[in-house]
Image (tube, rainbow, N blue to C red; front, side):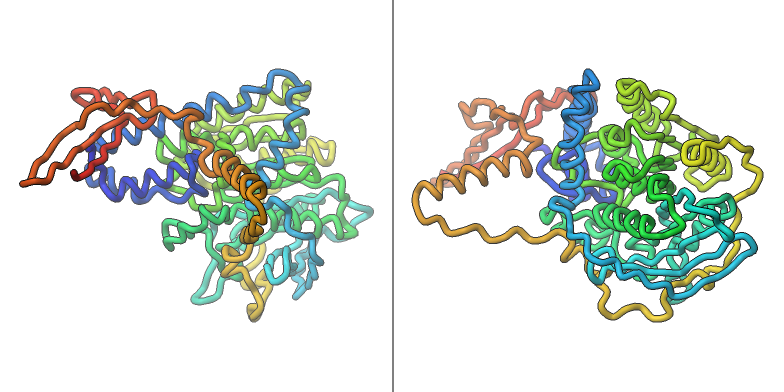
Length: 503
């Protein structure tokens, strides 16, 4: 039997989660990277498993959007795709839209705009802390931007000021240029610090079985943020855009894919292909909030395609190690085809700048230009730089954190537990229940398994061991075809399983 290191096994479990081989959400691949550093990747078992994941990932890449040949094909499937995405984010059925109960805790002013420090509850006791940037002397309703923040920690001692203060220069630029901009904190790096890195870092592997991912919390907070923006008298509810970078780029994708109230989107450094994550290992730089529970075995272009045909600018730098250039370009060309079916190629763009994974001025300028073009119908030169204008203390929402918050334990309640099944009252009811469970297991838990068994025949034991009157028979069989044939293995090693029994 081929041996594999324990660390590599953990890492491969992570990959199984991402590509939907009967597991749940993804986590960082630190364990797998440690195994490689320790030389474990030279083991035949590790090479076999890596090759297996490479093949499975390629299957998903080949299948992504392949069934879409015409615009009618897309229109027939789009609603179901969106439903699946809601489900894979833990949002099916949707939580009730309870009252937001917004509270403004303070205001700070600059010459041409002001900032309201506020919070609302996206569900009871799930607090979203935010800063609302509003231009002064408005005449009528204006377009609005939902800015979702990446992983920028702003903390002093035990006080977290929220990543909205880290990215404040974006909100200030939008307000200085005639937009209302709502900047929201994320779950992990907000003023109330919840958890993004739950599975690998804190061993909360049950998230996968529960169907929970913090990406779902971020998506829901974005949906409720749109509810709040549309309640504001300054905002034109038909002209709302979304942007953010890194983690915020990913959340921009979730909300733009899920909610048509987003009219224009500029996700920055927030997407790449499944191959980059699984095969190339850039999952090692990410956390749980970047991943859906991939029940339906999607590749990322399928998420991006749900934005079509609304104006979309994909923005990235060319040396971004966690959103590699080749994957970003591949995503663009796959969804460009969907825009082409709509006859809207003018409404999708790809901007690549030189640089690493960083919030650069070149990336900002393209986003500002895109919003001016599609939300305002204007094309002025971008003459103002986006610069921070406040101390982080000035933008803090809470003096004291609320005692009734559930942010720090949202993973325990966000996805409801399944209701206990009814006790069957007859053989017919039992058979009906069983059939439903088996169907759900095949479609939801083990969707990545072959449709038909692929076991090789077991004729003779692989090995026999005798000890006195006892005989150990070791059997070996191929569990799934095609067999793995690693060119570095001599001789080629099939994907196989060994079992043993004493007689």
